[in-house]
Image 1: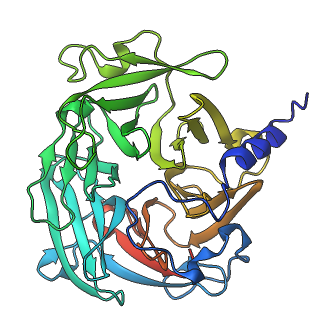
Image 2: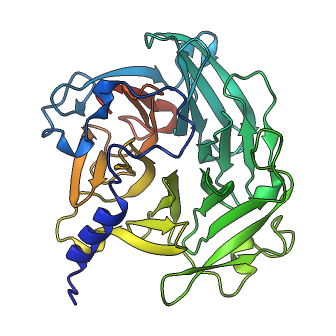
Length: 389
């Protein structure tokens, strides 16, 4: 048996990290078929070039633009401070909407939206959620809504309409705890949620019924917490009090397994990927085999390329993109046995990269520098990268 931890991680990445270009993206938030140009394997991108005018080191053939600054007046909406988790949603005119959380305290948070036409021109900006606190990450749903998570004690999940036409709704059945992010398992109609605590847990929500469209009811269901068994199988325990009226959720089941600072989470092709920032790990939970593995552990690398793991998404090919909170301010590709940066942001040493999201046609990647060059929340910046994704 090979006990080399780096070799073990390589084998796990080969198992979980790249599912082949023919694999269908199971996360149905993408409603437009990727262009032929977007079928590039990200692991094949070249080395990073010198910084461009926006301070971004990109592979050859990729370009950047800044689409919003915190405080910038965009169509009457001042782009929010501390931009965090984000996602894109296709519109009926072949355009798309990018939504972005605001991780501000004391009911100064919420969610903003940027609307683009089919050519990528910004045509509108507006709020879709106001007066909430520390909206950190969240997750898109296949029914084209955004679940915005409050990262506060007894925080809640808000379901938001990217178009801004419907009032955001609290989804109490998803529990009250220090929410970080959420991913929808489109195969089993379940939701997985991370918790940003040093002894946080991994949660799963199961609806008691499906609506007429076949989507889970987020008001009528039950929340469970994970226990990792000795054989890396998961045992799920139903929480007696998801509202945490007397005992915090992570302490209600003594057998619960604890994760050191749960961060981003993403579902792809039967696998739930999530990150833990306290120990710089990327995890993969196989929902079909009910088996969990660590597929990346920075501590096992003498000079790790990826540190400060945070937001995570997958490409069409199943390659993972992981954003760094501080670290080297990179977005890093995990694909098979390849670990390499897709980009690096220079001059933002006291910030973090947040809000990773591909445009529906896979021609663009969006993200933010939460605190910009100054390290202050009011100086956040939101970027767009053009290239083959």
